[in-house]
Amino acid sequence: MSMQGRIGRNGGTKVKRALGVQGALEWAFRVEKAQLELPPPEDLVEEGFGFGLEYVLMQRAALGCKVDGGQHKMGSYTHADAEVIAATVAGMPDSLGGIRMAIRVTELARAGLTPDWMPGVVPRCVPVETRQNQHGVRAVTEVVGTERVLTRGKWRSVEVLACPVTWRPHPEQIASARRGYEDWWQALDWVRDGLMAARMLRDVEVTAAMPKVRPWR
Image (cartoon, rainbow, N blue to C red):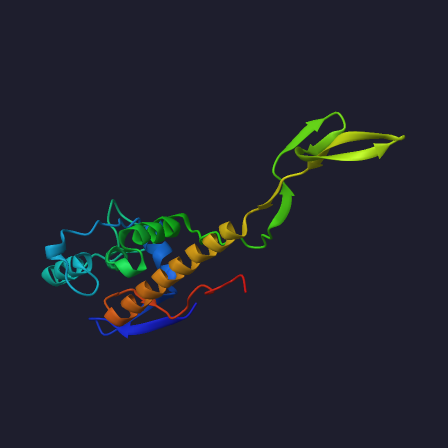
């Protein structure tokens, strides 16, 4: 893992922890237990990252300093960088899913998960229904018509049976899962760009690293 140094107040070099945006989100929500604050009324929302981030920055300016965070937290303290990350996520624009996507990003980060894009899944044609007896599992059939056949010199009516089939999983299910992954990826891309542009993180350096945009290709 790469590190980037900066000069502290005492003249020494303070090392910043370099993380990709997914790692930064998991650190903020899973390790630091940052909370996703719901956005305030629209008349309080500013352009850009929204009130949440502005509030965090104003609090930092008022304090003039912060308590150092770390791997071992004391009490209920949440690292200030984690609060900035959470506030940025809370400002998710409506074009990317708004608060619903912000919640999804938060929940996945807190669980340390990536959206399920159904890797390796191939639609298969299977019977709609099966039944099991002493002879094994068999597909359920249904009557779709009748035919007259000549048997031993006599015409008889016989039922024409067919086995209804379907695709499982349906191709649309797979497509929907992968659209969901792409939407999540776009949300992470927005968060990454915002954090890199704002340069408000003190101990964490968000890098350009991103998850694969379409891992199924």
